[in-house]
Image 1 (cartoon, rainbow, N blue to C red):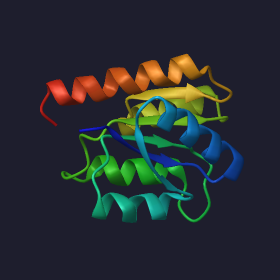
Image 2: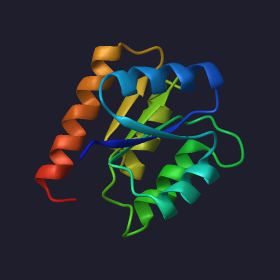
Image 3: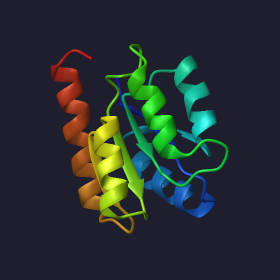
Image 4: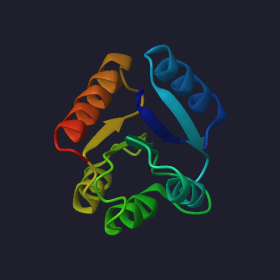
Length: 128
């Protein structure tokens, strides 16, 4: 069974590139372009991990993460925030929400793949 990742990114070029890189690494990727679309997708499918941008239209990434972490059904899905908003405030907010990791854009591909691998393995070991 391959790992499914929900990638929430509104920038078309970044979304396409990240999807390509993750798929080449063996992951299945589903995408959303805003926080509301992500919430709706998670209601239908349960990804193994979510990569969430913070600055999104319709519903921003921080609010979408907070909603997902507040629901019993989705609270255990690991969320990596991937954002250019690399400020102490942004990092603190994502930590308070309960996101597992913050990755600043631009990022190293190896760092992204290492964190994805670590969090999906951990979740499988915990039986989530």
